[in-house]
Length: 214
Image (cartoon, rainbow, N blue to C red):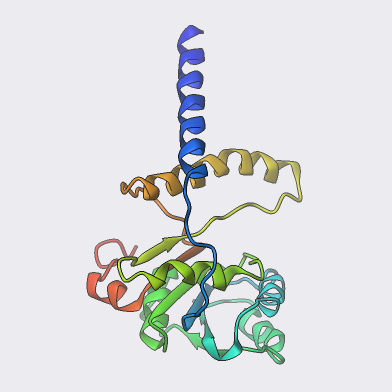
């Protein structure tokens, strides 16, 4: 029993230490100038979630001429693409709806395909079952004002609608926090693909999915 108490104590101390380090982080929160960005959303059989996603996109506070959105249909078998077209009728930003060719399958292939079509040098990606805050693009583009930044990892939280969601969030939050602090310490270990940004040229030069496309 003492062994388990020791493990929990060490884990708790680490979390407190990481929290302390994060509280000292003075990252910039705003920038006078804004960068052009391309938002990529791969989707497959997401007809139940796309409405919430687009509603949140409609609330984004960003100049309409500074952002484009690319939606990539990964061979959906439901009405996802049709419903998406309906949701985007009055969409304020420029957008494209792409369909993956038959020989390309999966989220990673969708991202690669969309990056090749992107007009901006800064790519921001999220998932079709997410919702974003109105300040999302403004915050995610800030670090790229520094030429040394090539990838930005954003926070992700569960929608706490059910008790099970709250349990998942209790487990998930420390992972996001530890990932953030590891980046802060220069020893990046993980990032969540549901809220991530990167430079297009860096993505293409590194060919990051080459050895793990599956």
